[in-house]
Each structure stands twice: as structure tokens, then as C-alpha cells.
Image (cartoon, rainbow, N blue to C red):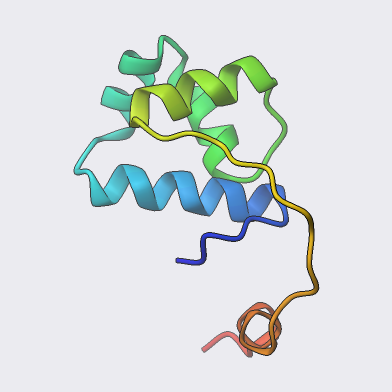
Length: 86
């Protein structure tokens, strides 16, 4: 998992992976964050959610958000993004 998040889909994938790595079910995370399971599904699917909902989920996972200047994607990131699905 890349630590660089450029799209809502990247954010959703990162949150899903954190949840799985920490052995937390979607229902448990929804409960811990005080948000609905549907909201968590939308977030993990790269769909639009409010910033307050995002921060509730991040807080429940025990992580923070850091904003850094954008850079061009690396060659590896480009290859990963455009690789052929198998």
C-alpha cells in the first residue's frame, strides 16, 4: 500500500487496508467511529463523504491526516495505476 493518496479511491483503499491490517470488521469500525456501516462502505469505495465523517473514521483507526505538497507520481505509481488487470 502506498502512503501517497491522490484520489478518493486511493483514500478508500488505504482506509480499508488499515482496517483489515488491524483486524477490525467494518461493523466494528462503524460502531467505533459513531458512523453508519453505509458511510464506511462509501468511504472505502472511494465515494464522497463529509470531512467530519472522514475524521471520525480516521480517529477510530488511530491515524491522522498529513497534507504535503503534491509531486509528480513515480514511475512505479504510474505502472501500478495503469497495469493490466489479470
